[in-house]
Image (cartoon, rainbow, N blue to C red):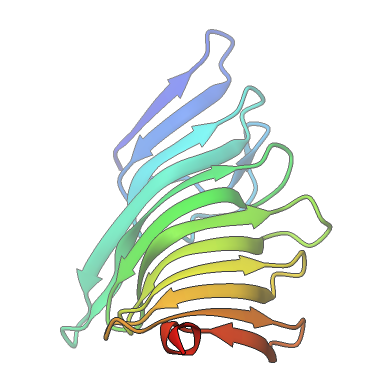
Length: 172
């Protein structure tokens, strides 16, 4: 097991850099709450109270069948006092998932991890900016598909298209 801990003079944990085997689980106020379930290695950041508040995690390998699994990276920053990321820059490229982007979450509205903003791309090659309501439902989506076609879509709370603008509709 290989792990580097950075601690304050009073012993408060501030940062951990570790391989997978030495990677800690979720730590709150200096105490590990759950075992590590993260697939990779990396660096975790802790606030003044010794509670995890972000990190840089990376992983990737081939399984026994040669498939690429758990391949990705995440840089995240958590909101104080709330479990979950506030801002996350992530990229995944394995056999099951392909995306890269910036996600902004709103953890202050009662339900943790409501995505409010997504800027990124997916396996289909589309570049997307999506704005969500406080329930995490897409309400405005701006997209440029892999073939270059673009659109701006307005959705109701159930995901029904209310209005959609595209260059062909605007130029007519």
